[in-house]
Length: 271
Image 1 (cartoon, rainbow, N blue to C red):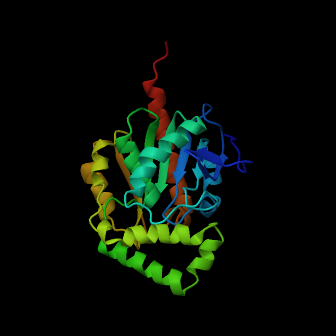
Image 2: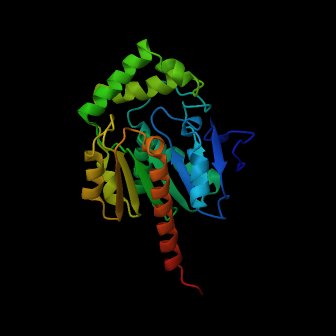
Image 3: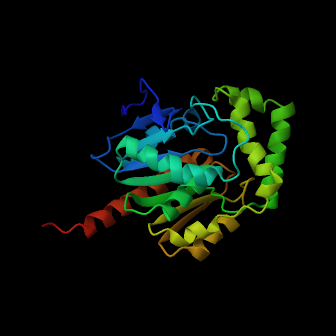
């Protein structure tokens, strides 16, 4: 793959073309932060956050749009209700291999945070050195489902569809693929919190107190179940701390990555 902010081609994973962008040093020269977007996100919707991360941390940054989002290939609806688990166990490992990434820190937002947690708690190996979970979901909550229902109304009768069309080649696929899955009656009992039990790398958990899609119960689940070091950052904002409290989030992530690198250096014993 081409390590570039504007690659000439997409990344092809199991016959699916995924748009992506890269910042900072290439894999091998430094660990790589791999960004996993929210349920309605894509490469472009991260805005300048990936570039700022690369500048602040000195690490490489890889961001991609999952299938059905941004300029990536479309999906066939409906999405399976275990779409997050499939992304974590099937697509993400293949993408890391294709990118040649041997040392990664996963940074996921919302659905992307869930995918990051599932991958880290399920895939054996030493490639993932730390995980940053921003507004993660491990189980459904009534308030979150109510907000997702409100988003449906905004899409059908408001201007949300027009806004999403600026970023997604197939806005219906992006929105309805996400919304239909979360509002499916079979999703009401969805719970993947068990994956936390198996994470063995440091975690940075970030949550807004006024998050309309999830409560602090999601963060408490991490604190109560994790056997690894957990740092938490609770901010007075809604669902997008990296945009609403950008400077604070960037600094906390940079500090977290610095601590990880120090741990890595301390564990390496020269021959």
